[in-house]
Image: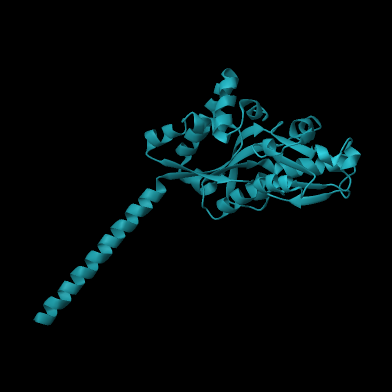
Length: 276
């Protein structure tokens, strides 16, 4: 009799343990599902404006879904996060978006954030004594490989028959600033805010000029198929807010420059460089 009672108690305890564990697991899963995970680039675009104006927070109030941001230095890392389903959406240069879709990642292009303008430039140190494009021969140029800057740089070098005449170095934007200050590189094709941190720089070309030569680049947003299929209404809300930011920019450009500049810790003049 005692053995039966003892066995019954064990069963009750075990079942109770699994019930609590299951409840906690379901609760954690529920909490995890109430999050929209957005990968962003630190550039002065519509996402930066929406964040600074606290507009995306409206989604949290309306739906109960919290927005969590993940900052990436380039679309290469953003694609890795999309592939591992660590984020639901990501802003990146269109070159990385092409890579993602050609590699059959389960994503879709859902938004064009901005056409890149003077936000990305090829700059050279004044001390490098580059007085003409041909003076770039033999120089060391850094850029984040597989980025829009890399694409524009390659098209520029190709147009001027300099593809095999310079040394190209793959660096993240923060690495470019450090290498520039150390004197390890002569030039760089990069974007804001690192661009403004390259002192003693002279502009050779910009993505705005490259666009005028039919080499247009843009920042776009990809969303995972899982997120699009499971939460189409949340995706629509996000994109609707970004659309409103563009209308706000058209009506209040100077205020938008100040907002995005403040977000990136750069001046409003520097924030004007993208081609919204």
